[in-house]
Image (cartoon, rainbow, N blue to C red; front, side, top):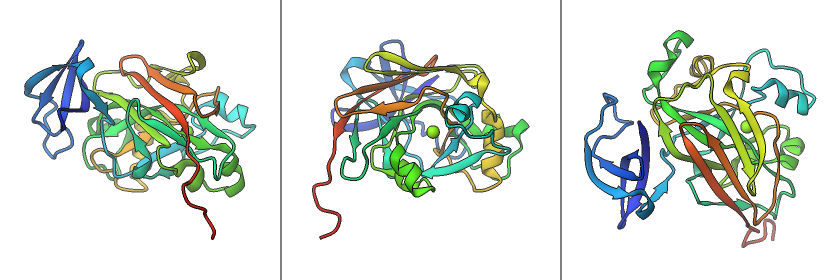
Length: 265
Ligand code: MG
């Protein structure tokens, strides 16, 4: 099932996508007791609606260095346990929304195509063997990063936390096999990343277990599972796409976003 959020005629709804159609659903996939089954309401042509970020998370927990080849491209040793950081909920944007390049602070902004998992049930101290029942489904995430600030600050809050630095979507797919999907990232139509989730150091179930032993995960929260090798910079005017088989294509354009006010007067 492909769950989405969309707006049509000024109204926002959860929906399910089937072929070229989207059907409104009254069910809230993040409500306690959601059965996993939905009742379809009015249908629309997909081309006639605007897809939104499929979820508005309370937090995004992101994983650093979760692919061997990506650790190697940074010259870093493999982590012994997952390295986690938070991207703020205010960074979330949806398909076709614009990534705003914060040119007043950064001169190096990178894409990081990633598989994101979406929590369906409140999760605390979950075991990896039980983790699947706490996952609603999977989506594409672009962990947009101000690489120059990541190095300068050491900790990641600023580098990863600008508004628009977390494109999510286009859907939450509830059926893919998260242990073997290919993550592709394209910059202006040219493929830059192409790696299977098989190459993750810690798989999605281990990540749910690890993170939920640190903090409670709420319905709608996202764990974005780290980027493969092949990261690189974007410039205003570029179009970046994260494609994962079975989920779809998360496409966003980068625009220049100098602050409208000076930082220090
Ligand atoms: Mg990342």
